Image 1 (cartoon, helix red, strand yellow):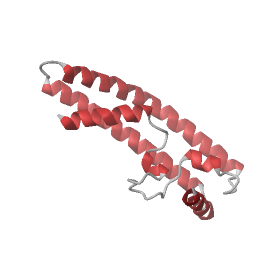
Image 2: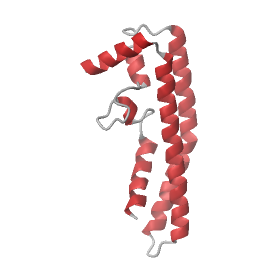
Image 3: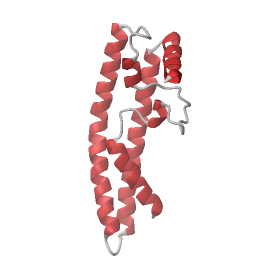
Length: 142
């Protein structure tokens, strides 16, 4: 049951979370070891990396599309999290129903995480190698 509640907490964080997961933002627990870039990083350093107008336009389009993709999943995630919370708060939990909702929560979480990773990969692929190296240097400098 602790795993279900843990997933519920993760689901709540995802609803309020950033566009790019912590893994792409250089978090210490980053399984990608800072290999990906957030849209904020790219835009903040667009002059330093000589971001072209075409790259900037594509970045904006990718982020806009990702946000449109996230919204329905995040809304459903919040609904299912609330539903699961109500179910497990009852004196007797309908195990089958609660696990069905938990399964949907995990599916939504996976869908959102996959879309986050897809966006981060697309952002990286917008940049040439020298731009990626410069962004990595700027990240290292703080």
